[in-house]
Image (tube, rainbow over all chains, first blue to last red; front, side, top):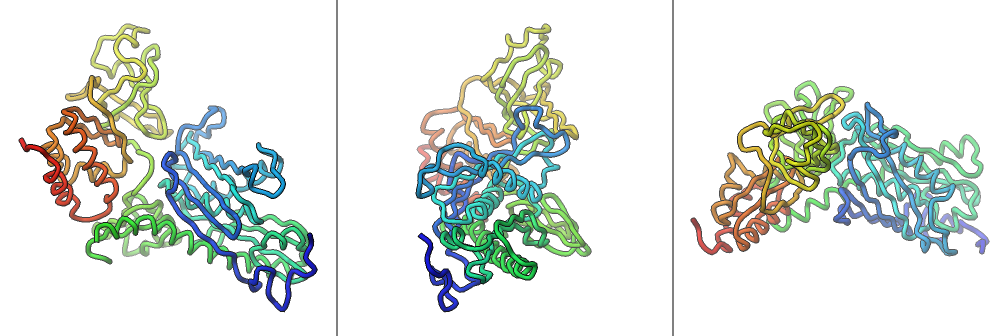
Amino acid sequence: MKPDKLIVDGRRLDGRGPSDLRKIKIEAGVLHRADGSCYLEWGGNKVFAAVYGPREAVPRHTQNPLRAIVNARYNMAAFSVEDRKRPGPDRRSVEISKVISEALERCILTEQFPRASVDVSIEVLDAEAGTRCAGLTAAAVALVDAGIPMRDIPVACAAGKIDGHVVVDLGKEEDNFGDADLPIAIAPRTGEVLLLQMDGHLTVEEFNKAFDMAVEGCNKVSEIQKKAIMQRYHAVNEVIE
Amino acid sequence: MDQKMRRVVIPSQYLGDAGPFKAGRGTFAEAGKIYSEHLGILNQQGNVMEVVPLKGRYIPIPGDFIIGIVLEAMQSSWLVDINAPYPAVLHVNEAPWEVEFGDTSRYLNAGDSILARVLSVDESKKLQVTLKDRNLYKIKGGNILEVDASIVPRIIGKKGSMIANIKKYSRCRIFVGQNGRIWIDGPVDGIDLVLLAINKIESEAITYGLTDRVEELLKEHAKDVR
């Protein structure tokens, strides 16, 4: 059901202003079998990410004699959306897996592990718009938790256009009935863009504005990521004191 | 900086300028600035910035004493899992036995454990291990425990003080491999004590004064001391 308006008196459907993010909760090191892991809640999104490796890449022909390869696998649970999603990789999740792998690869110091692979598993348990951003953000925390050498901690956030206004971090209705969606991922230290996709139409001015807002959103999320990683080791400290 | 705490740093965290400081292990320099490379503890020695990893795979270095598990016996070598990103090769020339070609499985088979030493690591990270040294042999009996390779230095302690304590109170024979595998043999209650101590070390690896606290714990639970 399309709502009549997505913005009323400068407030969005869920009461946010144009540059407010949804609520984000990140927890690192939640799975014991994986080398590194992360659980993330971003608005209504619930995502698990697990990292294995670096380990020898199989099958062997995928090995790169000079650097490690990064295999991210994005998967949505059958119960993550309103109408049951048919399980297994589809065109959409294969694409998202690819773009996330490439974004993460840019940040990992892959040259330290020739012939190896770093495997990242991203499971979306509950979806509410912006799962690729949530998945990439969770994967980044899981990589740090696995102790993998990285030059930056990647982070993602989306911006978009609803009812003619440019806003950050689209919610479900905004994504479905809005005019445009622009998910981006950056390396926050250098500001390098790791992922940039766009769905819908934006003018050049709108694009620039949306891009800046998304980068600003990324920086906010990045702080939450870093806190979540440090949190794991503060728990240890409190026991001792 | 808190006196009792070591400083935990995360990847891409700014550590200092490349002029007054030098980028040591676990760090990288970019545009005149030094950043941490992985999650770890900052260790500043003189003007060298070094980050000791808190977690992560074992990275083999030639000369490391390790505990390996044989994966496969091949015609003239064995493949050994040493907990590194890659399996290692143990060539018959590096074994202490006279092995006929194709007769490797008479000496070591899949599933056997060995105390070995890392012989070489080449630029493509091909690993070779050796059994030709004192105190290197095939393990018979005992139990093998796996911990994260990054806490091995803490289990050993300064000049082996921690491991000496654990041995003293538990009356167990213990070998700690650099790759995070620990071999323990002894009475059942002794092994329980070792596990207790290692669990404590694992959960409090980044704090100071750990050796003393572990000794207290051991004293409390030990039945008799040799």
